[in-house]
Amino acid sequence: MSNNNRSMPFRLTRRQLAAATGTAAVAGLASRFGMQSVAHAQMRGAVQTKRRFVFAYFPAGFDQLLFLDPRDPSVYTEEQRGMFLTDTRYEQLAASEFRSQVIRPRMAGGAESNLSFGPATLKYAANGDVKGPDLTRHADRIAIVRGINMGTVAHEVGYRFFNTGTFPAGNSARGSSVATQIAAMLGSTAPLPALSLRVEAYNETMPGRYSALRVNSIDDLLQVLAREGSMLEHDSVESALEQYATSERPCEVNVFDRRGLLTQMRESQGTAQTLLRARLSDRFNFLADSTNMPLMAERVALRQRYGEYLGRSLAAADINLPGSRAALAALAIKSGVAQCVSVMIGDGTDTHFSNNLDHANRLYPGIASLAALIDDLATSEITDPTVGLPMGDKWLDHTTIVAFSEFARTPLMNQFGGRDHHIASSCLVAGAGIRGNTVIGASGRVAMGVGLWDFQRNEVTDSTERGRAIMPPDVAATLVASTGFDPGDHRLDASIARATAIAPMLRTS
Image (cartoon, one colour):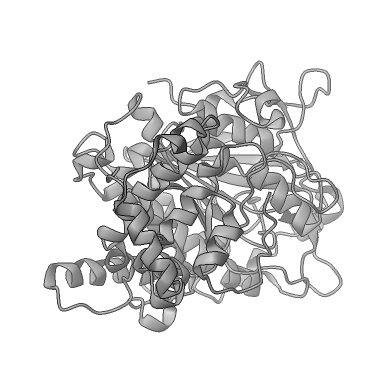
């Protein structure tokens, strides 16, 4: 099991790449073994086994009042503070680009959506138009889960709990990342079954080929795809690898392949060749200019879409901004390189001294980047027959997105005018397999505590006999069930296999 530090930057060498992931498949990415290409392998199973997933992580705990679990300021007034133990303080946003009110989207027919969002979700221009990406325009594809019991107010514990669906042992993660478990369950044949950009990745129980390739930056991924000189072995080793790649394998090799390790290595070798020959680094290097005019036009459009929240297109210096990370996640999905992508889409909001306006400004770039990602996948058609999905469908029809954090912020402001760590959180789920325009669960009316959900009747309840708190394993089980697979499958880690899917979030059609 890998235990990656979120904040420690690193550079990948060939040997470090293999050691960090512990999987022959990823080790093969940087090799020259010449096996048959697997890019056009026959599609296995039903279309749902080709489901894509994006796990969008907002680090450091996001403010529910400003985003996924707002409160009506006309009800939660300063006079009622002692009753509800909640400070909306939306008036702090009045003179900014945000509005000091709850956002209630309208559906296509004009009816008010079931969803509501906090004021940090949208910015507005002086003429009243929405400024930047609009998350609410896809309310019909979005569900919100509220009142989730994160079981902790410690960063590492909550983060790793949602990441794996298993409560950590102290600060140490237990089990495999949900992305890795889903990739294994689906039998992913993507070159990278799981890709993690600035998100921890674990594999304790799944076959090694489903371990995530974890990169700390877009530059790291470009190194892998382009195989720069710094990743090469010494000339003598490279020569030996080339010789092995073109030689016949003796029968004795197959005799000792009882556990399938050599077969797995051969499969990964083909994957490596596919990646390197496809020159995917050209596709992912979207912040650089190109003399290829169609490619350059594609890059310009991408920079505009994911830089809209900045009021300009993304530039080369923006490589580590939320918009750039979201764009990379979209490219990884649409290029067929990865099936499950985890991306740190937001930047740190762990400040206990920020008022609403400062926290909203910290939170907004991640929200806007999430909105751009959903909009991109909702409007982009599948045009490549090799990905095994129906041509002409939109990518969001086959991609499920979950946005989460390790916990929330307190509904009451502290003595510094900021907010502290709060156990009850929310998450956003959108896209394939999800019933949009849906709210599941609720935080408490007083102090926004953990709520109770009746899993039999699919409703909020106050009864401790009929209901229990929604927890991260329930969300993970719902993601699994949305593909048509049984969350109780023994291949999944025990906590998720025992969890209950939140039925109303699943499509019935």
